[in-house]
Image (cartoon, rainbow, N blue to C red; front, side):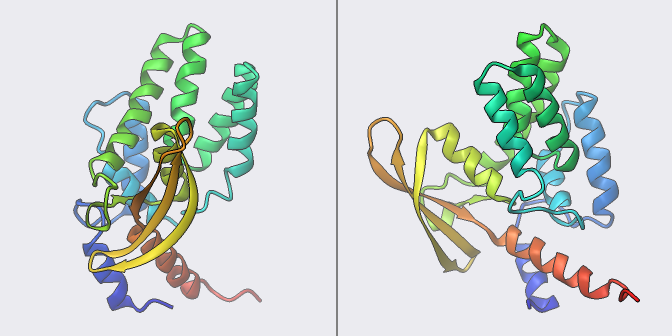
Length: 216
């Protein structure tokens, strides 16, 4: 179990935003701003607030099946079903950039220009927040992620397949090295992700769980 002091240290190494006094309230307000099309929505703050919520789901277990079903329907050009699945996934975890991106495409096909514009802006905002945290080329400049979904989104957009995972301990926190191969050329390389936020989020969940009243 990570001690309180260790959690505080990890926080200082995370996303470059101020500490959140009310993560649930901030998260809800930022989600509303994004849904309203506010161009000033702070997606980095949204992501950090999310990892402090009791419902934080770094492995995506709550949305995995919905996303898989949505992607299957999307590939089959069944956007009606895909939209239903992606909307359900986003209702559970709003910060899924890939769900918003695929929704945007389906809404464009349906002729919903406003919906397409909104979802594309959200997807881009979330993705840009990850890209602005580093370049993934080495441990010192690793992308700072809050979930496995964000790692997968980076790999998918880059057109590479992960072949091996390795954890490296650094002064900036734990870094995951993912060995990759280009999906087209087969060229090999590596992408680095700082997973300090995931470690902190899991520690906070454990800490909050310890505070929960015992069941009779």
